[in-house]
Length: 334
Image 1 (cartoon, one colour):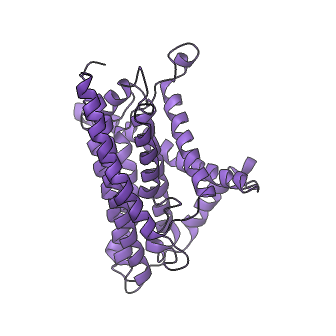
Image 2 (cartoon, one colour; image 1 turned 30 degrees about the horizontal axis):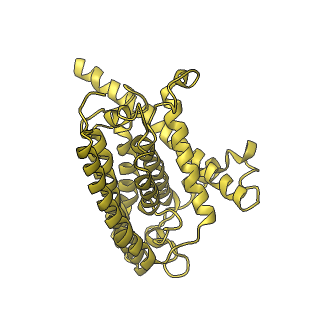
Image 3 (tube, one colour; image 1 turned 180 degrees about the vertical axis):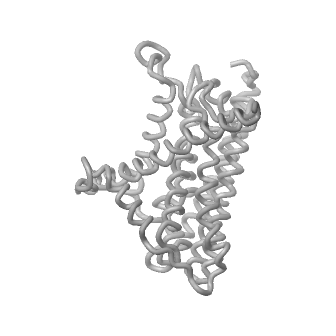
């Protein structure tokens, strides 16, 4: 019975983590559209429900009741598995995201490696969907997406090394607690900017939404998908965007820590602070989509391999040299 109680308790924890994430995805889609409307001087969603809040729910119902069409020449098993893999990986990554000092589903010592591994696996769902469709447009879109995601994961990995040098731990809670005196966005501001841009590319957001190019690749790897299977790709994409915003807030913006440890900032619950920071970063994501034109693919690759990679490597050397010279190498006591 003891093991059964532990199992049921874990199921409850997972349920109370996954459901808010799915609700948040629906809300940020609404926020995304409202920001675009504001920037482009139009209303955005404003008819279905108050302020258009139920527009995402209406879209979800549309996807649920639409027919799922599986191409006759596709590899049906992999075709069906692809969106499931994409959505599942996007959700399981949240297991190590801390919303407070003891408010985390799994506070493992290698949390940052877990996040990096799960986000890297996300490319498999896209490759599976593009290949299994047995169509040239989805296949080319999947190749583009795979190359893009792998290229910018390299930059993100090196950026994370800068943070780890300042912390001395792979635990996400330790990374947040190490920022009690100063958020890493101040000493590592160039790395924060590169992380933000790399996160846009990693999640296929504009101006790097090249896997879905209407002029030459239609909808890219999603071209042959419809109904709820298309919606699962869509859910996975937005859950990944929120995950990148959460990573940015933990690595650079102090996670759940307030900007100043004085009243009234220090009495606001810690989950409120990290949620606010996630929403702030997502707002920046939405602004970029509304105002920055799409890159060419050669420009995208040049930015990642010829600019971000050398600069982030140089910054690792500078960070390590600075910490060593001034005897500021981290200890585990925060």
